[in-house]
Amino acid sequence: MNENIIRLGEITLDPTLLLLGVAGFAAFLLLALLIVVIVGMSRRSAESAEKTAQASHLDTELAELKGRLQTVAEISVSRQSELTRSINQRLDGVTHRLGQNLTESSRKTTESLSKLNERLAVIDTAQKNITELSSNVVGLQEILANKQQRGAFGQGRMEAIIEDGLPRGAYTFQATLSNNMRPDCLIHLPNAPDVVIDAKFPLEGFEALREARSETAKKQANTRVRQDVGTHITAIAERYLISGETQDTALMFVPSEAIYADLHENFPAVLQQAARARIVIVSPNMLMLAVQTMQAIMKDVKMREQAGLIQKEVAYLLDDVHRLRERVLKLQQHFGQTGKDIEQVLTSSEKITSRGRRIETLDFEDEAKAPAAKVPTSGRKKGKAPAKSNGNGKQPDLLAGE
Image (cartoon, rainbow, N blue to C red; front, top):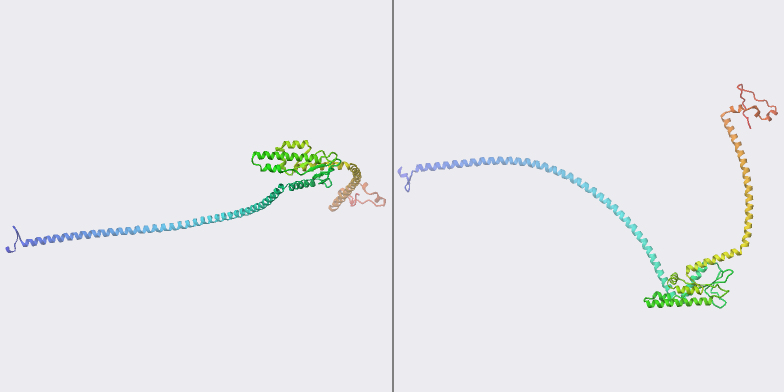
């Protein structure tokens, strides 16, 4: 037994004890391992139970979450349907308003286009008129540029005014005077010398004045106007004022109102010269007024010449009026007599109507009370006896009265 002793240096170890120690240590280790395993298993079971509880709790929460999600889904579906319906309604309203606005805009656009077409048509017409007027202005400018044509233009305007205002025979164009001069027009006044009208007005100076740009050119144009018009005034006074044959005043016709106004505004010396020479400068409007005055004078003279005939006709007219009055008085008398006859006829018709109503209603009480003196005497003369009483004092006189 001593042989089995194990020596470790100075330490002596018994193998049996060593084995027992090793076995005890192994048992200890096994016990510790078993304890660890048991503790691990208990922990695992606890964790498993905990996980099971957590899983059940999670299932419960998942079920609640599922229910909530389903509720949210239903709410979202209903909200989405309401939103869709609201959006559709709004879209319908917007579409309707948009359609109305488009229709109104289309109508207004159509109206605007029609008005625009009308205005364009008016503008087109106005443009044509302006084009024609421009051509006429160009033609008038060409006429006024030529002295001979300008004289014909003034002569034409003067003749148109005279022909419109005076009767035929009261005037003569291009007549020859005793001095072999030929004025543009002679107006024949009754019991008085003729009135001379001259239409050859000088316009060259006014054209130069209109085209003048500098002060020197304007002064030269003014001088030319005074000289030309003054020379023409002197020529009219020398040629056409003949004592006993023409009036001592002649008319100088200006074919433009603007030139006539320019003369009165800027050339008073020319007007004074014309007044001293007994020349009256007239524009178209003034000539028309003078013509109307002379026409009134002619009518007055004609009425004076026909005064005797007018008085005779008035006397005849008074006789006719007197006869008409007498006949009207006779007719009035006839009407008065006819009115009286009609009144009597109406009185008789009213009496007949009243008696007819009494016969219809058998109302004879008032007639029975009438005195016997009202019975016609012709009946008594023929031997007719009065009607017998019916016992109550009343007589059935059915035909009493007139």
